[in-house]
Length: 93
Image (cartoon, rainbow, N blue to C red; front, side, top):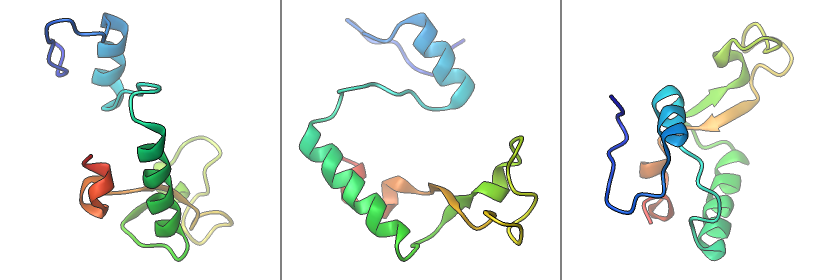
């Protein structure tokens, strides 16, 4: 059973539901207004330099080719900023 609830006139297809169930998110292109996307990008970039945690680092994911630990070259590279919804109101819009 999908954890993404269906709704009337729902544009999300079964393949999208399966992707959401597998990955926990769904990319919907052109869903947000370009101005909102620009504001979100600005907040994200401001949170990277200097880094405003919490963040997930390349070494944390243990993907093939990822640094073995944070002390390894590239290990302290931020991969993802965490807690987006509480980071700034723009992400709740």
